[in-house]
Image 1 (tube, rainbow, N blue to C red):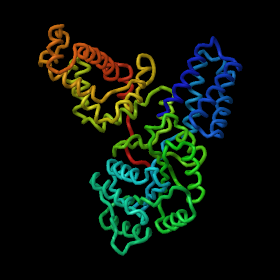
Image 2: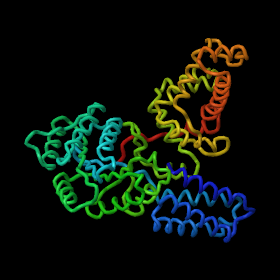
Image 3: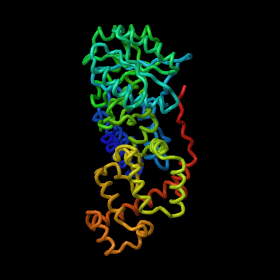
Image 4: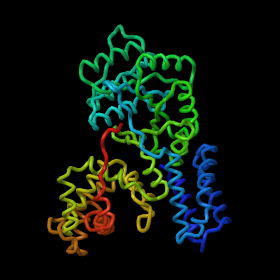
Length: 450
């Protein structure tokens, strides 16, 4: 996500760093290029204009133009204004004074409402809550069936409704009664959608809102539709009063205009983003982390959180010990590759790494998932002694390993090279490395906010 915008902004900053000193003239050129980059990323034109005006006001000051590293000052200003545009702070979900809290999930048909309802229910259950889902789409039985299948796959409760409950409000009331009886603290109400906004849909949603008194009305928008998603969110907000947005298909949106515009246009925050089809491909939206990713600074906090979810504490400590004591073997390398699959699409993981120095081209790496299967086969064809000490793998051993794994000597050579690079990189992130020391001090708030 944001790849096109990120590339263009980094080129602008590179050109600024190439200048001997900053002047009003070369700053004007840079600001025009930043504005064009935002517009090409499908950012709303008013949002782009306001952003550039805010950056210009701060960047044209004498403090910046005469600074020892003016280009870095400009990067900081752009980052700060981008965080402000995205919402400044993470917008956490609200809770009712007395449970259960009701969350209405609204949006147009095909935006990913039902899938997002299931993903949000999973996220809530992983973060100390006990949600129950209900579909009140009485017009499309397939939609209710889809949520039922999702609930079964996720092993989470769903209120199916009694035969006599044929209206949205009746189903919602039944779900509330079920939640109270079973001690569920959140009710997720998956509402009906239309291909376009119409008065009948809005009337129904308004009535539901009056009866349910939800603490959250979350609008689900498809990031791939760009400014259409922003317009729909704005219209829903004017007529219904949404409290936040869930943006789906962010992994397929290389521009990111919707994510960058929604807060500024609607005044309502982005709360979650869908970044893939799997149930766990769903993340809280962090304005500061997203701004850092756009500017090529990476998103190490999100990467650390993913690792902490996937790896147990003992596994993390053991791996850190091996890296510090230089005991990270090819067998460990193989196991790490297997574990990487659990973190999600590898391109997404590499996109969280800082795009600087030796890692600057990492996000452009095209990773074939079959490559991991070949890698595992190569390491499995080695003896235990070879796995523990890669230095003994000479030409004859490489030919034997290649034959045993059904690969080529060149592929064996590539694996050994990758192993050496990963060993070096991981060691810099753990224990002795500068970044490792810094990351080790971070306390990651994983709780459900107020």
